[in-house]
Image (cartoon, rainbow, N blue to C red):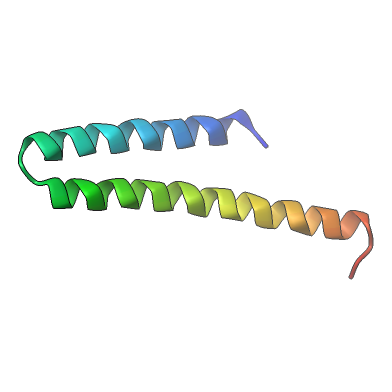
Length: 65
């Protein structure tokens, strides 16, 4: 795991919170919720890819396939 991924996730979190705050103050709370949900989904996809790589490496270490 590289430090770049942590910075990417932190950057997505900061941008998502800025968008959420701006949209909420503009009175568009439903769009703010959707923007926040999109940011969370992007981060979850990044983490799921890492977990997939981890499982492949564990599988190769123990010669499971």
